Amino acid sequence: MPPSTFRSVVDTAFHTSQCSLATRLAVPRTLHDAGIRRYGFHGLSYKYISTYLQKLAPSAGGGRVICAHLGSGASVCGMVDGISIDTSMGFSTLDGVPMATRPGAIDAGVLIHLLRSECPDADKLEDFLYHRCGLLGVSGISGDTKVLLEDFHPAAKEAVDLFCFRIAGEIGRLTVSTGGVDALVFTGGIGENQPEIRKGIERHLSWMGLSLNEAANRTNATVLNEKDSTIAAFVIRTDEEQVIADEGLSLIRRQGLQW
Image 1 (cartoon, rainbow, N blue to C red):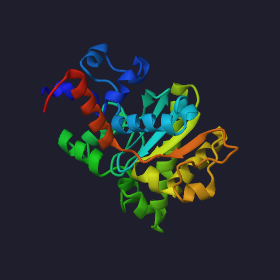
Image 2: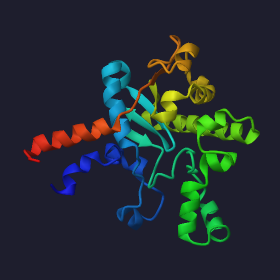
Image 3: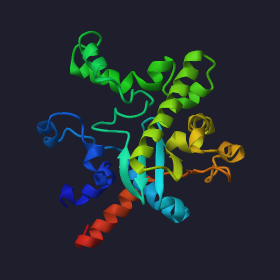
Image 4: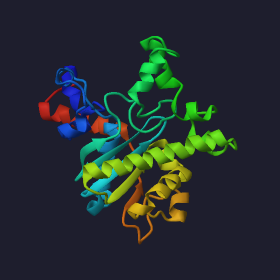
């Protein structure tokens, strides 16, 4: 079976619906044409969430949804009617919000500076960006939010606060792409299981009308929002493996292939 047969289960495939304004980087056109553009990741997770939410809450799932996939890798995606409109990760999984050991969005000037000082070659710079930054870099303690939430050092609190602040900021940015927000979904290991992180994000988004029910948030309930919240909020456990299985089976059936 040719590799191209399973192209629809590539982690970036869900984001191919995005328009050129969302995917283009401000680089020369020749570079864009050569593939230097924003792709986005966690597409398998977002596809699962999109499908599940439309069954769980059709009115919300068919509207303007922003989903935060929060784990050791983290990203945020804006969807309308179940279709990806924009996302935080770009050309690589380094972009977007801070992660366990990755910085998220970073000024390119910093990279130039590092190449001239701390990381004199691309391999060292790559290792630095993938393994020494993010929550680990800010805290100097750990890249695990669970560990940081239990730590009393100010640097641990600062790392968690920065994580929540940047995610909330990215949610705000994505509302420009989606034209507003009707529902917010938390998924991924952190998004599904850590009420403190969800609460920290909510604090920065109360101006948008987001209000989480304290008891629901504390117990990781599926529906999180207060009744008077203008934004519906959900916790949905993602299942990327199920998406791979479903897509693979669908392709086999469509093409009449045999194992």
